[in-house]
Structure formats: C-alpha cells, structure tokens
Length: 489
Image 1: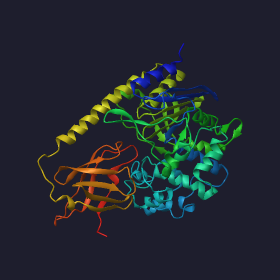
Image 2: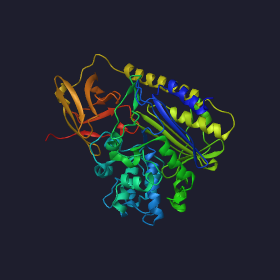
Image 3: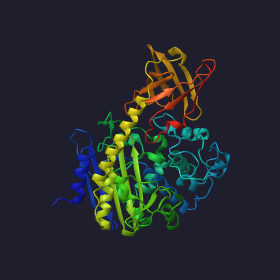
Image 4: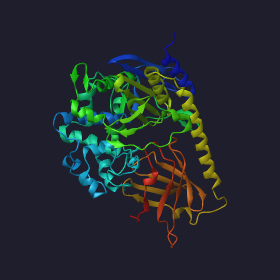
C-alpha cells in the first residue's frame, strides 16, 4: 500500500504545478521517512531524491542563530552584547538603535526598520556583505527601536558577520565546521559556487504570465546568513534531530543547554492577523519569534517552525518538541505545497480530524490569483489614455540617486527610455509611456513584474525625482526607495 505521505505529495505536485519536492520526517530521534518526488526540471526526466539540493531560503536564519548560540555557550559572546562592541563600524540611521542594538535584537526582528527593509540594496546586487552592511545607515526606520516586530534579512546578515569578527572564520566556514560536518550533512552548502558544483540539484520555477516556467538561481551569497542555505531533505532532518535533542546529536552536545533554550524561547510577540476563511483552521492562539525560529501553537501543541523562500523555491522545517516530531518539505516551485504537506503530516501524528490542506491551499491560491488579476485590472482601468508626457523623452533622462541602493540611470536609447539600477542588473527596464509623466517599467528580467514609474516636475518643468508604484518581490519593497534627480557630473 502506498504511504499516505507519498500519496499526498503526488497529488500536491499535480494540484500546484510543482515539478519536484522532497520530504523527510523525524520521530523520536529517528529518520522515519525520506523521499523525493517528481523531477528536478519542468518537463525533465531527472528525478528528485532525498539527497537533491534545494534552496532553503530563510531557514538559513536558524543556522545563523544556532552558530551564535555555540559561541554563547563557549563564553565568546552574550545574547545581550551590543553589536558595535564587535562591529565598531556598524551604523543605522537611528543613533539610539546604533548604540543599543544587541545580538538578541538582530535575531528577534526588532530594529525599527520596515519588513524586509534593505532588499533593494542586496537583491541581485553586486554589493558584497560588507557593502550591504555599510549602506544600512541610509535606511529609514518606520518604528521606534524595539517597538514592534518587522521581519528582516539584513539584520541576520549583520548577525552572521559577528562570526568572522569573533572567530576569524566566515559564517559559511563556521556553519560547515560546527554544524554541517558534525551533524552528517554532506549535501549542504551556503554559496552559489558550491551549489553549481553539485549535480543533484533541483532547479527553481515560478509562474510568469500565469505559466509555470524555470527561472535561474539568484545569487544571495551577499546576504548569506539570512538566505543562502542549500540543503537536502535528509540533511535538514539531521539538523532537526539536533533541535529535538535539545542541542545534542548522537550523544554529542553541540549547543550548550542555556543558549539552546534561548533559541526556541519567545523573544518578540508577533501580532495575529485574521486568517483567510480557507485557512482559518490554522489560526493560532499565540505567535512569537524566537531566535531564528517562529513559534505558534497547533492542535494544542507548541510548534517551532520556519518557512523559506527564494526565487523559484519554497521550503518549510517544523518541529513539535513535545512529540519529538520534525518535518521537512522542500519544493522547486513558488507554491504552498510545503506548508500543505507539512500540516497534513502533523495531523497524522497529532491525531484528531485530518484536514484537506491541499484543497484548502488550492482554494486560497485561487482567491489570491483572482485578487491579483483584479489589482492588475484596476491599474489598467485607472490609466488616462490619450495623454502625452509634459517633456520630450530626453527631459527624463539622467542620473537618479537613492542613498541606500545607489545610483540609477535613465537613458534615451533608439527613441525609448531605458532605466538601469547601477548595482543590480536584474533591475533594468524599458519605460513605456503610460499617462502624463508616468511610464510603465517593463523589466528585462522576466521574473520582475511590470510596474509604474512617475517623474514629478518642479515649478520650472524640471524632473526632480523618480517614484515607483511597483509590485514587491518576496524580499524587495520598492516603497523604501527615494530616488532624487542628481546633478549632472
């Protein structure tokens, strides 16, 4: 008889148009299930197995927190040590936050910056880790320091850079030496060159123009401690065994008890927004962020969980410590398959009525797609046709500067305007007149959806800035950009 997990994953691959997935389950310190499903490539024949590599995205954050916990246990670091004690050049625009920000603050998402702030600096950019961190001083906070939860990638980059400051080893080397090697995680790595050297790799896919398509791997090494983990279902299961063992794996204590306890202790309250009707059964009674992990309840048990997402990939790692249960699901398409499969497995082990999570997430996906189509239709309906720009096209050409992201250039090429962000080649677009002084940005990277760019004029009919009305990417909020027209060189 077919295993129920296998039946559900096979069904989910078809429902969500996902080429491949891998699943692992840990129970009572044993790997009780591990398998791959589907293919590494859309339309390909190479099969996914339990050792196939997937990008795990933000599950990387728990790796960073665990590495720091090791150092706390060795007395080399304290959770409440100030960041500037180890990175004296670190600076935010808020001087109070700069002076008082601690290691715990970095990991608990309470810096005062907006959600995914800084994505416009690092995403697809040629800036290295040091330059990304240097540019954080130009980001504007949206809340008081420690005032509220706002999910971050760049603060985890800063956290990861504490490791070379303390040990002389890169975050990548320390993770390998102190976690991957002792846990028996040979498939895992943290960089694009290492990923490309591996032959057993699942390729990413996304819906572009409502059609599932392969997309290239995006290099996230410059924010590695937040997002660059590449791993397999079997490897990540070993990592969960470490957590379910309280910091001990195969009789060896890798993380001392006191700092380990902090990793899964609530640090920041996360408000519970209303859940959509299709997913109302997931509504928790409590929700918090620990250090590299989210905490919530499900069916009367505490769940330690983190999802991961990068271009074309989705992942989830979840644990129910009281049941000594861990679940890993990795998928190579931007669909809710990992979460649907994960909660189905939790239902099987926790008892009670079993929900059809595949059907529930399928219904939710249909609702979201309808909302997205309606939003696009609204933008089109608001277009004022028959207008002309106030200036000839060359009047919009020039250099624009955002203090954090850097320079962008608008150039007149063969009778049309072309926009290029100097630091990130993925943000290059042909600007098509939309109405008045607003242009549609048709990005040359098909992964980036079209948006609108407006060029306000001064009283002297000179362009002063460049404003974006652009759909956000997963980790990029264009609303934080503040591009001003720069003086000619």
